[in-house]
Length: 444
Image: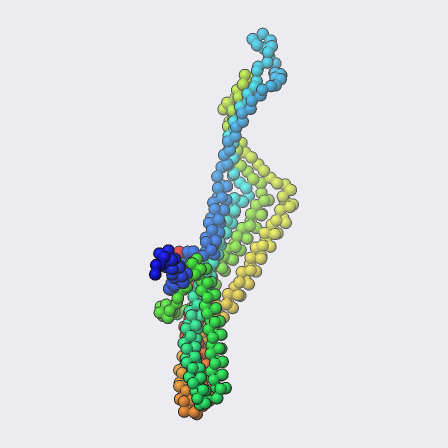
C-alpha cells in the first residue's frame, strides 16, 4: 500500500496544532500577579494616566518662563500709486518722481515675562503637582485591585479544578457501584429500585461534573485574558502551589487602613487640589503684570529702512468685569472643595466597614477549615460504617448513597478550604492597604 507523504505531514501538523491548542502551563500566585501588573490593560491605562498628569504639570511649569515670539513678513507689490506726503526739497534730484516701491520686508521679535498674576502661576503649579500625586496614588490602587482580581481568579480556578478532580473520582466509584448493582439486580439479589437509585446518583454526579468543568473553563479564560496569555492556555494549579502560601500576622485595625489605603490618599489629594482651585479662582481679583520688550526692523525698498528698533516696557492687564463675575467662580470652586471633603468622609466610613467585614470573613475561613477537617474524618468514618452495614444487610441503599454524598461534600469542602483562606487573607490585605507590600509592587 502506497502512503501519500503529504497525508502523513498533514496528520503530524494537525497533532501539533491540537497539542498547542491545549497548551498547559503552571503559574504560582506571585508570578500571576507580576504578569498582570506588567501586561494587563488596566495597569497600562493607569500608567498612561500618570504620565499624562506629569506632562500637564510640566506644561504649567513652563508658564513661569518668558514667551519669545519671532514674526516676519515679505510682500511684493506689483502695482501701486505712491504719494509722498512729507515735505521735500524741490531742488533735490529726483524729488519730482516718487520712488518705485514694490517690496516690503518686516521682522519683529517680542518677549514677555510674567511678573505678577495674582499668584495664579504658582498656585496652578501646586494644583497640578497635587493632581499628579493623586493620579499616582490612584494608579497604585488600580494595581492593588488587579492583584486582588488575580487572587480571586487563581483561587477560584483551583477550587474548580479540585472539585472536578474529586467529582471525577466519585463518578468512577459510583459507576462501578452501578455495574455491581446491575449484576446483583439481574440475579435477583437487590430490587430494581436500588439500581435506579444508584443510576440516578451517577446522573446527578455527571451534572455536577459538567457544571464544575464549565466554571473551570470560565475562570481559566478570565485569568488568561487578564494575563494577556493565549486564550487556549490551560493554567494548572496544584496543591504545592498553594502550600507556598505562608500568612503573616495581620494588623486589621482601621487606623492602619486609613493610613495605607491608596484610594483614600488619592481622594485626600484631590481635596487638596480643590482647595488650590479656590485660591486660583480668587487670583482673578488681581491684575496681571508682565515685562515686555522686543526688536524690529523695516525695509521698504527705495523708500524706508529702519533697523535696531528696540522696545521695552511694562504690560498691565486687569479684568474689571471679573470683580463682579468672579464671585460665582469662587463659590463654585469652594463647593467642589466641600464635595471632596464629604466624599472623603464617606470613603472613611466605607473603609471601616470593609476592614471589619474582611477581618470577620478571614477568621470565619480559618475556623471553617478546622471544622471541615473534622467533618471529613467524621464523614469518612460514617461511610465506612454504613458500607460495612450495607454489605451485611444492616442498612439500605438510601443510607449508603447518602453517606457517599456526605463524604464527597466533606472532601470538596476540605479541599477548597485552603484556597478560601488564601482568598480571604488577601481580601483583608486589600482592605487594610497592605496587598502591594505582599507582592512587592515597588519593584514594578
